[in-house]
Amino acid sequence: MLQRMVHLALSQEQDGFILYFTLPFATGKDLDVTQHGDELMIQVGPYRRKVTLPRSLTGRPILGARFIEEQLCICFGDRESTMEDGEDKS
Image (cartoon, rainbow, N blue to C red):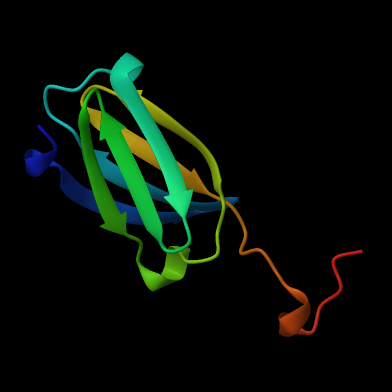
């Protein structure tokens, strides 16, 4: 099932980025998405796949995800700043 996963597009929206995947034969209720650093873990039922994020999404948190008609849409927010970036988060 996940062998047929296809990255469709990355689009920049007003509040961040949206990454689109086609997941044929999947249903939203069996779907789980987690982020670890620059990788996404997409799980559909017992099947898992790691996907390396493009550089433009590295450091951006997942704001939400939805599944519509065999398409997974993952919304990413603004890049998280750190003290090393010269910015104070307080």
